[in-house]
Image (cartoon, rainbow, N blue to C red):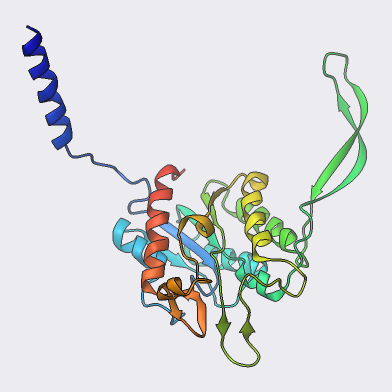
Length: 267
């Protein structure tokens, strides 16, 4: 009897090991808008394929692409308006991948909130009455990085309250030389306001909690590290452009997104 039971268990294990697991990707065939800068821009010549075109190929996603080279977080409202004008509400999700140009331009990080003391009605274990509390307000300003993010996400979440919004952190960057008036140092130098790229990446992560939006940390997950010569192979040019990924760089970014998006529903 024991021998029969062992054979039965082994047979079940064999069946299980040969069975094919079918995963229905929640983003399969969906309509996705992409807001961003040159890494998203279809007109950027660093690569023939972009991360979103790989996702189109693999998941049959319909891409609505609005990224423009050189644009910063204060352009997101314009990109959202163009999406609304061209597609209305006929979109399933919005991916926002921007911020490296804010760092390069030296936009100050700033603060998320201002505070002021106020009186408010409260009653916790006692009759309600007026109490003193601090009240915070999001900074809505184009003059700081966090103020720009606040303005952008406040706008997008009001314009598309039912849609999945996903932020992508800026990827690592090294030299970019496009002429005497566009000579960008590596990320291990501070920008002109004294900040490293890290602070801009961290702010995008924090924005996820502040604005209840999903964040995919491409900076950490995609593995692209152009400060190493060995990783120049994933970018347009080893000498003059280790900012813009080439086809293989975009493919690696897309592989990460394909897997990470499995955990995010389309509402």
